[in-house]
Image (cartoon, rainbow, N blue to C red; front, side, top):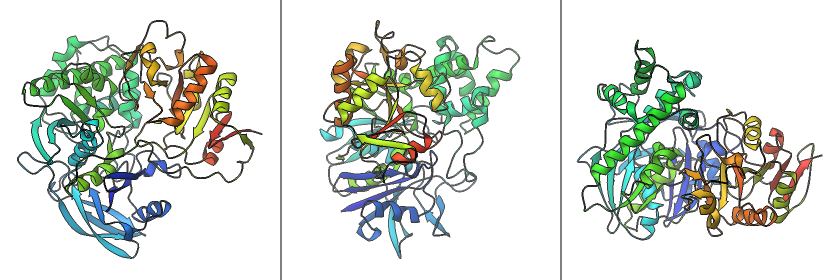
Length: 555
């Protein structure tokens, strides 16, 4: 059975699952140098993507469209998405955005009228919260072992909700809301402050397809490293937030209250201090709420994190080190980049099969083949050992494009810029050529078995979703990957999950004695990963490109 999940709004994409195995998951932003967060608002693109993978609409047994919200002011029980198909308007009813207390979390909504090719298909739809829930659980090690787990879902448009998943037979229970704050509050607060105020304009004319401030949270998380998190002001933040009605303006209102009042709680605080303190407060509040919820001794001590808030490595790390859980799992696509896969996963779980997905993080879009050397570039055969030697000897960055792209927002070695971390000024150089702010960190990718020597805790983290302290002595050896606060957003690799990157690091370690490299995404500013060598060459800001056994250099 082929199941196709569709996410039509921001971070649009599609995923195809067969018999509980992910065949591919393609986000629109990763095709043709599209803009980040690109919606899938033209249904003919579904036909195009399927055709690239050798699939037609007629091959698909079931289509699933991710649930969403109705425009503000309209009945949220009956949302509909307005897209087009070959220029003609199409209205697609979908499931409501979130499940409600007492209702079936896995409720299946069925509709007709999905036009693809020359046919019109029936389709199902599930709550947006449900796809986050099941997408995180089904890809977790707990699902592979048939174990119960609790799942925390906290996305931009919803409050944090805790669920329990029992896999055999599948049974999902909504345990309840943790506190009344939408996940967008951090990004909205930061977007109202001067460093990010210019980014508050809507990215698209339709806010239903493209909500505001999607690009702020990650930058603000890095900017917080310039400031100080002061827990003494948690009481002030709590007083303001607890006095507000739940709304999507709470972040803006909080920023206004803290910056415009006559006697601010910390008169000498910088914007970075405000951002760091709110980020710290939200992490502590999340920890406290989960601590209270986990007093129930019957709940499993295994946690999955889902929703866009699970991209915050500070909050993830706090929960992982809290002692509340035996293990914490965050998929590499906790935000809406995994929504198409999540939607297909829910439909698959309703067939009665075990809710465990056979998947790999490297099942994104295929690399488009190179057709000769790009103008102004020459290429020559170069194996992985040769790439390692070029990085070591030249001490310069290289764009690396190979195989299928990564799922989710992090470049994990198949659409990356690699560079030696030992070179002073390399972080500044990478930020400069990528037009990024100078406070933005560059991640280390490290051999898994050596990571504990360099970082604390240095535990396996294949998807860059936790932070680690750099151990004493190593800050000076690998300065390019150490953030302002001494931490690093570590990616670890082994030969089973990431064989290409593991082989490259092993070869580089033999030459240098250093088991890591800098790793940052290979893309135009504000756009998805480079889909081919031609795009990387047109960008042209690094001296070399390596792809599928060839090294390209400027003529």
